[in-house]
Length: 256
Image 1 (cartoon, helix red, strand yellow):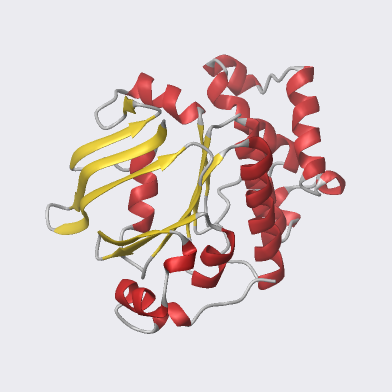
Image 2 (spheres, helix red, strand yellow):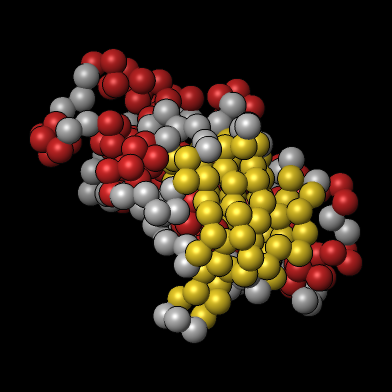
């Protein structure tokens, strides 16, 4: 069964700017999928339509068979419990510690009062520390996030997502702000999470070589349209050129 399905989805911003045009695809449970394309091609819009940070103009978007396109606030809250989101700029509460930020991954599962009071069970705390340790951050557990490097912050963001117990993690340019070494660590961690926890991962990436190395499948976007959807093995230089309409896709940063 598909975990995500787009059916003829269109998105128009400000009634004039067409971000997505008749986009249709599905992602199976457990897949590791990268979406590539030039800036402004609609990569981020696709991810944000899945968890309704952005509303599609028309078409259908299904998550686990449930149509989220026109779901109300309560239904979207339930959907978002099962969808982790990792942002380019981490989206952490910088003044709080690593463990506090990771525990925030449970907020969607709590009442408003419990969330405001910061009440977490001992089981939740133990799980948070276990995840932090697996991501190599145990020595930073009580550090404020504004004291961390970019790569460490992104690992905190991943840990927070895992705390949600998601079935899907969306990654919006997760390594765009990182150096090659930190980028490799992040991609290795995401790959490991996908394989060991069977969590579906959909990533937006600018680095074509990284997408080819880690992905089971690559979706190429140009001007809001899918122009490639297949395995990395068949993504030729000619097809990369079709996606980027230039040699931009060859100007890529190697990771590891």
